[in-house]
Length: 325
Image (cartoon, rainbow, N blue to C red; front, side, top):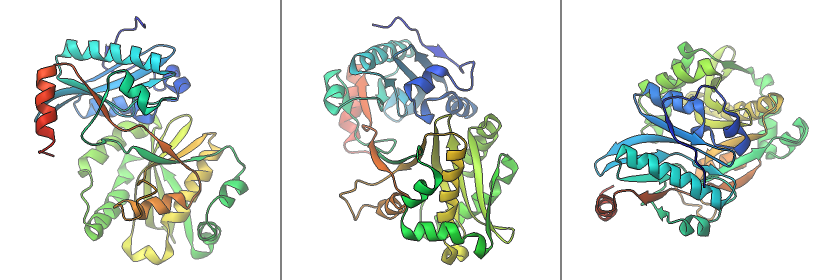
């Protein structure tokens, strides 16, 4: 069992080598901790050669918890157990009611049950994601896409569409304006503008967040916020102008970001959450088909699990949580 202790605050380095070597998700890396602290949240972290975790202190109507989004990351179920032991010790010191985790690594659902974890009432981060490997050459990456996507990629310039990347938080209103339009048409409720602004101001200077913009004749028509780690590009948030829908600018913008990630030396392009592939009527089915059209494969992220720290309080939460969402 590991003797590693947890730490509070921020790690010293932007990209912790242990996080990278273990293949930790972006939400388990230092830049995400920086963003959480900027929002006024308390962060804890711990790691050794075989596991790592980053946890955020959260309050809810049912009490308090430590939450590891897409973590801990461990090389085996044995080392995951060690990570959980350290996390529970931290949770007890903070006097929270329970821990909430989304373990990553070469694990099975049986492994998670074996170490005593319980399924949460619902998944917090998407259980399934769509991932495209970038080891092939650029022509092969394009060939893996649908014929429609390849055509939109190759004809973008003829339509006057160009692409650029911004590291300037002052350009965030380009994305926000499009997002508001999409939210109005699709009746969805995105994060408040202040959330994205904080994200841009904290993560862009670290090189961990970029704003990609598609323009037609100099006018923005589509945009996307992406997270970047040394190994992976994450397709985090996207929006486009409704009046430019016939141009389908979002498609060549994605293919451009994929090729750009390849040229940056990244190994994966993570499209983020998708619907179960056997549920064609799922509310995410439309953008799931869009993500699949670029080629790739499904990846099971194991879902959200919990472990009580204060058993009585947790039992009450589990009971009430069935009726209150």
